[in-house]
Length: 434
Image 1 (cartoon, rainbow, N blue to C red):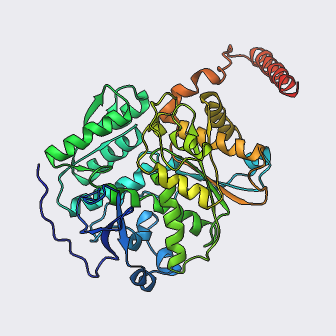
Image 2 (image 1 turned 45 degrees about the vertical axis):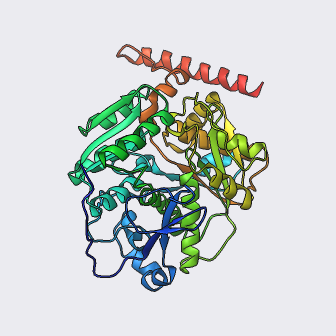
Image 3 (image 1 turned 135 degrees about the vertical axis):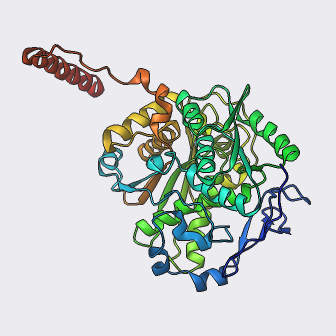
């Protein structure tokens, strides 16, 4: 399939004007392009903030749909023909019980584990990317994915009537494979890690002319993550938090939340405020955390080896930008091991009733690590971003949780089992206290 020429129609000119290189500043037309032809730096969408300031207000946003499209002027879609499947406006949960456990008085969980339609934050970026892909004339879309992105691309492509072929590492969790196949795309399971999958996809994009959401459509795709910043600001009563803690894979999510906060400041929707950005990685794939700890301004690629497969990107495209944001905002980047990740998943579930996947377990484990080290002020308004649902990675916790008490259907059997359960609970607490 070759890319068709599309002429988007809209009643007013969109506020996004150009693609701009993050390194040298070179500008390009808003086509399917993601790399600067001069310095090979990444491209991102450039907006006219004077136009945005005239068009948006708290009232116009609040009057919009209950989805990411309430922020449409800030998103790179030119027409009214965007794809809205109810993505976004996920809960911002006041995490009182978890906060008490960690000694944090103003802790919130931004819970994209219940995002629509596929239970991860990737629904945001794909909704934007496929809306733009359709405007640019693509009829076949694709992605390189560690699971969640494949789920989202397949689901939203099905809704939009687009052909879909997605690529994943062959060793992904069963829930994520099933969660893609149910939408009936062509699914390519590649024998290799994500970085190898991504290299293959770059070749396919060049030869087949498909719309790859995280390759040639990446400048538009990544803008969807800004909505996680927009929503938190709106849900906090049109103000910014003091700190965010978010998982780091490519580093793009980190940078786009930061960009979202700044865009709300630039357009007068919220007051400027210093927000500390703290990032979370798994020790088995922590190239950004390693660079941070060693004081480097460059990323050394690593070979992933962790249960947190959804953030296991050994050569993160936006890693240096995540480093810069953490350092200039006074944040941190930490890593935790697989055991701590599982404990993070369990901790969030038992305190707040939120079942997150391994990426969320990584975020909570790093949040705990920072809190216990005294690196988070207990009075700070802190938001931890949970980006995916635990039902997708059940394998990670299967050996770390209990078994049901199987009993006969009579009262005496119930009473005996209840007493055994209480005895075991007391023993566990004694071990904790010791």
